[in-house]
Length: 460
Ligand code: HEM
Image (cartoon, rainbow, N blue to C red; front, side, top):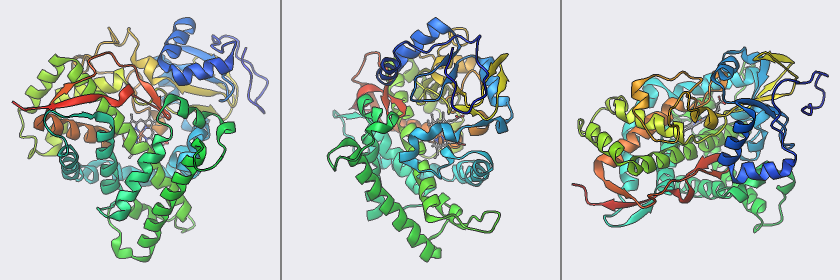
């Protein structure tokens, strides 16, 4: 039997298997430190739809069953809140972030931001992405090794600052890059990620304490973002086609513009959601491409069919095997193990079960992507499966789905393909970690341990 959240009705869930462990704190530590083993063992025991109540979250139903995911993503979005279930990341993105909004405000803000990540606007970023990739990889030299994750993060952060924020080279640009990277590094180990999960640990014991360090970096970053906002307010001629300019000219129904604080929170959201995720996906892609030599060969062959340095970015992003490699990377090692939780606003019948108000439904991306009935030999990296059949949005969901589907999905895939094509057409790389890698937690996402070390070799 599960514990019901406060002010829920008296309904109880009697039929769903209850995956709540005896020692909740132990399970919480395990899910932070050994997420894959813990998820797989729980699924083996309780199946692809079960309840879990670990105490630090409201009770939830964890689903990795495509029918259940379809029922959730197709249901009327008014039945759920999602923003309120994302409170863990409020210290990073602020209360006005799209990720934390619900209802009409969420819908309005999503509509406003969406065009910047799609269509012509996005395709115009192709050249910038290629140039940034060349500039960052230009620091590599033959015979030297490098770690993929920080290099990819350097690329994806510059991409987001230049294309989405319209920031150009300069002191503030450099400072934002440095401070944001340091701030996210506060949660770079599974242990330090615990600070995000437990409010009681979020205490400022001075500049050397982990939370104190985070707060000081956040303060520095806020000052830089507010400086940028103020400057653009006072110099309208500096406004362009970028997101910040778009947000500054937006008016709500009462004709009011967004406040500085609202602007800051949305900027933080794009920075936070938009660059580390893509960098991790790129690092995994480099790992898998070089871990399975046949994949690399096939991919290089496909890339050789185009002059990558000069080809139209759209032609590159339409290459079928490159697309399959990116999809298989996001399937086998998804960056987010869960889509956002959906919190029930009223009691609801879901998959035939009566669920109470306040219950959360959490689609588990990782477990769904590792189902052998959908993906035979799920632990094998096999891009061909994406050429042989099409998977439904309830079987393949690295970017979530429904009304909260990742706003940056098209942008992230566009960037991943251009960066990979640019790197692989210029460099020959050798994987130094020729071993199976198991994802580890970095904040709330999952990255390759050690960041994937590669060696630059002479290109033949
Ligand atoms: C490989 C890279 C990425 C992955 C794997 C990823 C994954 C996700 C996932 C799983 C969600 C939750 C969706 C749901 O619950 O249905 C999400 C939401 C979101 N993502 Fe991404 N993301 C990536 C890149 C980006 C980029 C590049 C941006 C923007 C620049 C971005 C902005 C967002 C935003 C704003 C949301 C919240 C949407 C909402 O609440 O309506 N993401 N992402």
